[in-house]
Image (cartoon, rainbow, N blue to C red; front, side):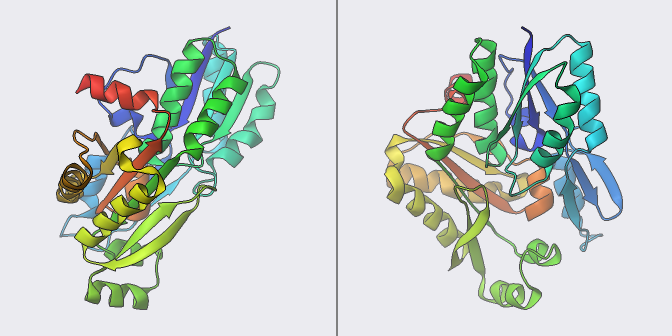
Length: 300
């Protein structure tokens, strides 16, 4: 049996700065900037996308993301067959956020006689998704069954939280994530949304607060209420444009909860395309600690 993990390129694993102890293929999603389409990780990355979106010479640039096509997914599966793989674990960004899982499920029957394919909905995004991908990769390399992997990922996912905020609403307004009148008032009053990924993998606004610092404080408060941050594995996700926000969050976690050295991971280009370049998020896993958290701490 020759096995491999396939994951959507939104999982952040291409940017964590470590060598993966398992074989991984990224199903690369697409970023469209105005009328120009890029392939994530090939001719666009997070840094370059942020540069484009914050260029003062082009203040109204609009980005969006699209999943890999049926043709691209079929080509990837065909290549895996040619390379001798027999078992493929496919981990997807939340199906509430992208059509990736539906497209993969549509393509999978074409390879039923060649590949044993397990398609898993992480119901998550960014490094929270990446932690599940990493867990699946290690387990698959150890010869664990698809059922064992799914059970483990279900447990990790059920005991995790994702919260994030944005410091500027201009991009969300232009991308029609919020209404223009509501956004204008929010900007005028410096109101920041605190956004939560719920158990179905859907993004919901949990709070609207004044000032970025208050939004960051509210994120930590939400996580503390659930299980106590001292029992959590934490990741911070941000962009170069929101590093000050991450530093503020790090300081808050250290001063209020005694948590230091929380890993910071760059947001994926896919997330930046959907929510803009000014964002910071906090991911928490409660109880069992995902393997990626240990690996990042050991690499630090």
